[in-house]
Image 1 (cartoon, rainbow, N blue to C red):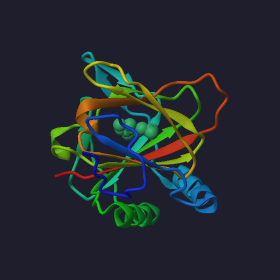
Image 2 (image 1 turned 90 degrees about the vertical axis):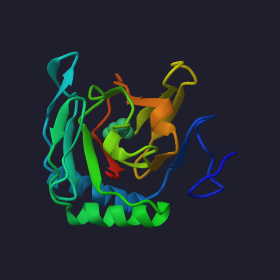
Image 3 (image 1 turned 180 degrees about the vertical axis):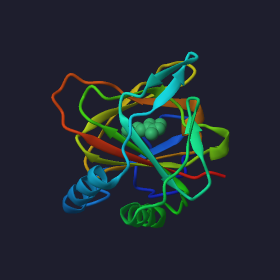
Image 4 (image 1 turned 60 degrees about the horizontal axis):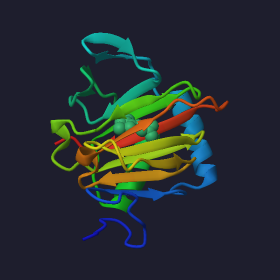
Length: 201
Ligand SMILES: O=C(O)CCC(=O)C(=O)O
Ligand SMILES: [Fe+2]
């Protein structure tokens, strides 16, 4: 059975074992231009290391974590202490919460400086996110390909171009049964900002 928490006229992009919905123009062009500029200039972007096969390596992008105070969140062997919500992030969170009916405590921010910045295959299934986490992913700036594939079989690959102002909502079993990545591209692209709103238990 296919049951969407969100809008019944929006198609589930996954063929089975999870639900992922795309809302291409969640924010208008003007609003998205404004947010891109604001976020690029005001968020505390840093290049941070992660642990890979026991070694510390720099992530191929800049990151920042915002969220409710005193609730650290981490992945790939690192723990990040959240900074306080900015006015823009609070405003955006409110719009997404009203639309989806889901509440969020944290937002992990990624800045892909150009086509050489990327994020490898992974799932967002840390225990602190609960059993079937709903994750809201906002994109501003350059369009990058978001790829999904079935975790166990590595098959059923799906390519979703995430455009300026789009919202991608992943829910149900998406984070257990599917993994995702942002591959590098040789295209001469400008920067892209992605925000993933998450709820810690
Ligand atoms: O940049 C994206 O669209 C994906 C980001 C992502 O997967 C994450 O932050 O876990
Ligand atoms: Fe992710």
